[in-house]
Length: 337
Ligand code: AMP
Ligand code: MG
Image (cartoon, rainbow, N blue to C red; front, side):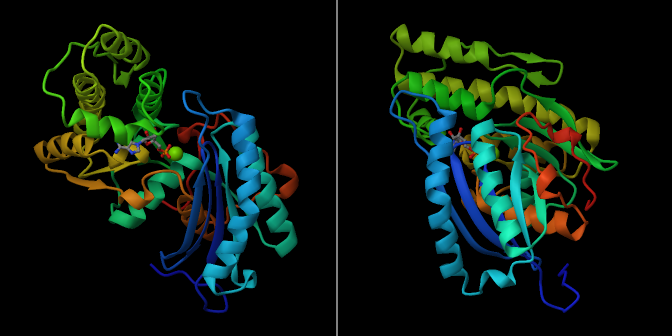
């Protein structure tokens, strides 16, 4: 559906992403177009994890240049922007505050409404926009999330999740400790293709939740014990993805959804796509995968969800626009679905 403002023009939202490694800025229209999408990823020194203060400084350095690029690429002045959206959580406090400060300043300067967006809802909405999925069971797998969710009565209901670290974190920390480059997911996927031997690893599903920390420790130990990196990557993927596929299949049987939507950075993995495809087929459901360009964190997910939220009257006063580092997906009331 094309929404328009009172003057008849399509609505335009400038969205800012800043929850973890990625600083992003994008502009979306209510026609469902991503007019521009500029992103920059902070990389920690080799062998180290994300340092929140350093990542915040990185985002602080790149956001002003991004704004200039967005204005240049957009070919419409900032006057054309109807609202400013920003990822207000969950994420790392210092990083969230950097993006929020930038968004608040823009909203005040342009005298436009400020729209707070839950980062995970952004992953779901950009995937829905790009694939056309309407009422799916969602499998969200990224650096910050590992959740199985379906929409009902105004909220995303969680049917399974990780009890400790996320799937993206499992892959990135394994890669880091194994001396591979960041981000680890794609490197592990390439190595796994050359793996020939399955090495026993702990498969931990509790109820409909998964637990990955023991798997991480065990995979690193198998590597230290002298097993080849290709075989360990292959086995790690098989176990980690199978655990989640088992839980997703149970949720699919329970919710009887006719669509499954895979989104988040790890959705780019062909082996995971393959497993999710097979359970969808078994249950007569359609499997959808977010396009690779929009799988990882981006300004686009925040700008597009900003449009949906703005049209439903979601706003926040600058004085009350606090960030929420621990905001859960199932706490957000969604008025537009
Ligand atoms: P996000 O937090 O949504 O930006 O997603 C980032 C995560 O996606 C990181 O943990 C990456 O390692 C992971 N990722 C990216 N590409 C792949 C891939 N091909 N296979 C598995 N994980 C991936
Ligand atoms: Mg994310």
